[in-house]
Length: 244
Image 1: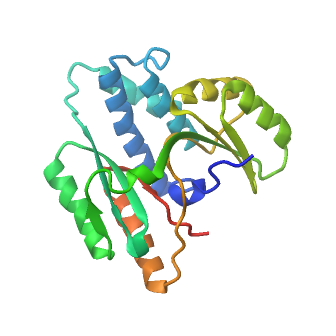
Image 2: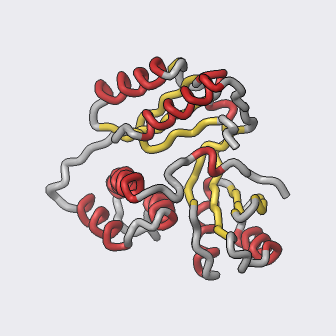
Image 3: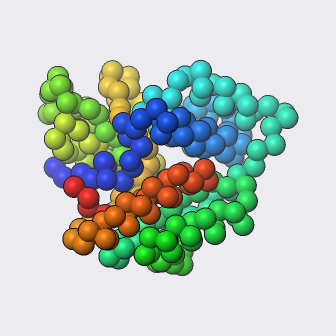
């Protein structure tokens, strides 16, 4: 079976150093606050969006105490944090499609910052919808099998029984994809079976990939990703660059 085999190209935060991990925690905390406020509940059993963010938090080893503190903060009467979800789309070097998802309390700060990154790296910020048509929203769950302790067929059957749509063994990574609406249920069932994840979130998965051959384009594309991910407001950077 074939699935989304390029998960490691999409999010550089997986397996990141401590500094990157700390930044990832901060961004996920922002997502938790938004999920609690918009869902009206701090209980993931009654707030599907919060359940989705918690799965993502656990996959990057965010401590449970941090998760609980952030939920309690969001529920606090004195909390005035207010973030707006904004999406930007454009093209990187060589026509690479890029989607930038942000949570911001100031569009006038975020939009110029994102535009500057595209301009500086030989890219172009476009209109909403200019590239998103070439991506599919999917739940993506990755299980590390580097030690070879897991039987691939068993994992596949467990995933499919849980409601997953697809499974692929991509080297040491066992990758499960599902419909976004089924994501929380699939995660819950697999957790109950004792599986742990190195990636678990709803992603924008490219329908096809672009390989960059020019050294300048490769450097600019990597710089664009770095600049965007270094922004405090940017939550996710999705792209179809095949940088294997």
